[in-house]
Image (cartoon, rainbow, N blue to C red; front, side, top):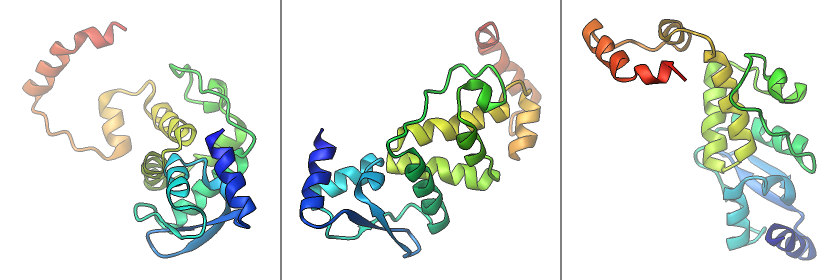
Length: 174
């Protein structure tokens, strides 16, 4: 309700668009309701109105473009909740739409940048989707396979690793 009232106030003032500025200086003119899917942007619009550019210093141009594609797609069409725990590595089998599953079919670097952007912009449904994608990538893999997949160096000695496994044995019983 607060968002709608503020968007209405912006619209009445002739501002149905807001200008978002990426970390690289690219400006995106976006409908207020689309931009306000981000709680961060919503708060900034509520505080400062729609007349000033909204700087997003933690989001690169290419990632902001991708975030806005997601928000435009889901404006008035919220995504279904993702069933947890994931029962498959196929996100569609976990309740994710085909569009969303294809949307997060990205390189690891782009996926992790998208996670950081969703977190920074406070877009819960996008953060849930991107994190579910990472979870699907590790589902059913051994720690060694996960390390290889994500290029993680194992800094544990065999003794340290055995100690950690023993301390956390209860996790494997779940």
